[in-house]
Structure formats: structure tokens, C-alpha cells
Length: 81
Image 1: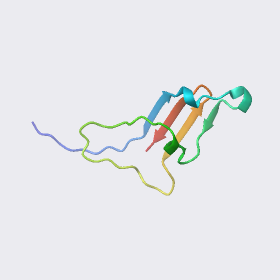
Image 2: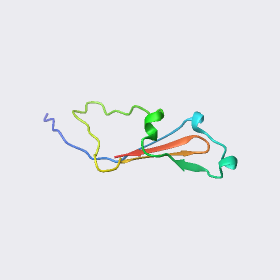
Image 3: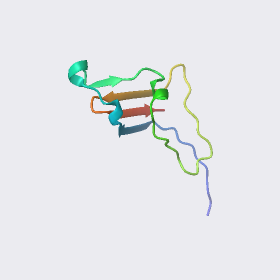
Image 4: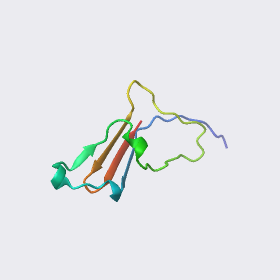
């Protein structure tokens, strides 16, 4: 049996519901908000990991490759590259 290494570039999307982030859309007038850069540092994010990985890194460019939106019901949509 031959075990080979390989590399993967991926676009990871995660969704979960956090009732603490829910807001009243009637008062705000919007159903969904996009959080500003670095807002994800203030919120709980699942600790996603890949078993048996040798190394991992984020794609670094001039702007962060992350986006986070929250719906009025507290559904979070988190995307990173």
C-alpha cells in the first residue's frame, strides 16, 4: 500500500444558528446583516479541523478572505478561503 500526500485549496462554508445573535427585523428594517471585517473575532465560531492534516494555512491577500452574515433569526453564514 502506497500512501501519498496531496494538497487542497478550498472554499469553506459553514452555517449554524446562534439565538444570541437574533434581532428584531421589524425595528431594524433589515432581515440580514453582513458583519464588518474582524467582527468574527468577537463571536463564537465552530472549531473546524481536518483529521490527519500535515499543515494548513489561510490564503493571504491584501484583504481578508472571510465573510460573515447573520439573519434576524440568528442564522450565521461564515465563508472563508
